[in-house]
Length: 318
Image (cartoon, rainbow, N blue to C red):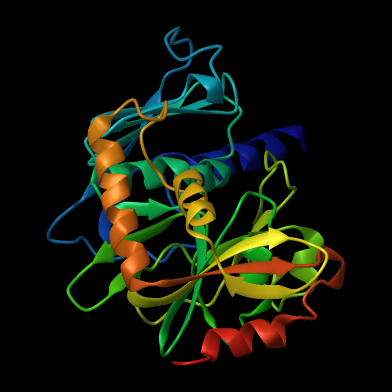
């Protein structure tokens, strides 16, 4: 019995372990990844690869050990992101390559992939000089609507609660592009991270979810319906906050700039890269000229009782 169980566990580990490259299209770029990305549809081999994702056994590498988030560094040329002290590090170079450094043996490859699709991939897109926001997005046939706010303001849960009327675009990483006619957002991974109460309020299936043991908000990644479009014109952006009363209002410029800077993927330490700062402020000027921003204040105790008012505001003037 013990031998059978050991063989089973070994088979599971081998199935999840890095292997020949898999191909995906996310955020408008083609990925070649040595680690399988759960819940994300694979594609055929593309003519051009934009980002290569590889896996490195770096157990015992002293340059990565005993470091955590405070040791992160990000610039347009090179970035190091430490996740889960002494367990995992991501090295990102020139917007073209992400190396996943494994620092310990006991790693869940599905969870590694979930981490990868968050900050590491976001900073890789930043190195390509794209505007990347920490945001959640939904869409309908008119276009896209983004929710921005501090962690814990309910961006993902609000988006999930609106999926009867809208399609899901992305969470955490929103990659934008500017053209002559619109500001667009690219389609991200088809999953949303929710805690148990939020998941129960949605129609997403627990059977198509991945538990994230390290998540401080105790969320799991729930698969959403695949969005039929890969790019969406942005119509409105909402900045979320908790308060005593429900209110949607125009946002003041000083609060808008502060929120934008706090939720933009840029150089770290802040202002360590002049080119990054210049790019970020240039994008901000373009964004506020093209898109209407609103402050969305909600009473946490009311849950989703004000969703009809939110939908009404989203659809207004379209």
